[in-house]
Image (cartoon, rainbow, N blue to C red; front, side, top):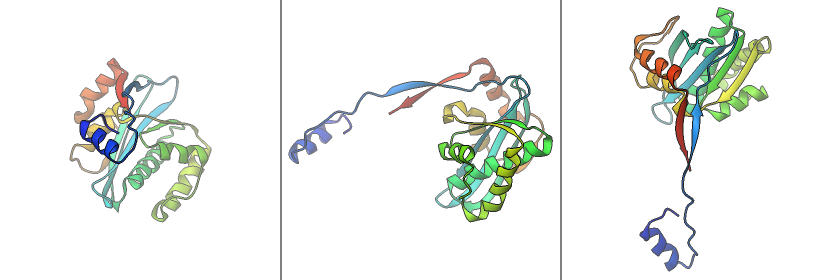
Length: 194
């Protein structure tokens, strides 16, 4: 129950013994910089409904937190999961084309991270062929895939909330410069976990 008088009265009236919700806890969320020749890509996807228009984006950074490039693409009508999947597919394709085979993929989708770890092929049919190619590509990569909460994925959040054209930019675009600097200066963000 939430800790309100109305919830307490309802539970008492129906004969249920109330149990208060535990207090919230907070965890630190970190965006970690890299070491050596690794490239980190933070990916994110969004849908403007269920189903709705989907968009995928990502940002690549090196061990100095310098932006190596970012992308924003649209994927037609679909669901949020498909947008997250499209973001990782696009990120791996870009990394492959640029010869970045030490790739740390960071996503706020735990399911996507599990898919990458398991190599599972069962994805929505319209992405099945692309996903199969991605799994083949990363067999030749050194890949590290991790989950990060939205608070640690600020740059992708900025890309998500700005109307921008589709494309790939092999540099740091203006709308993300301040947030990239923030990531460099402070790597910790708090997240409430209920």
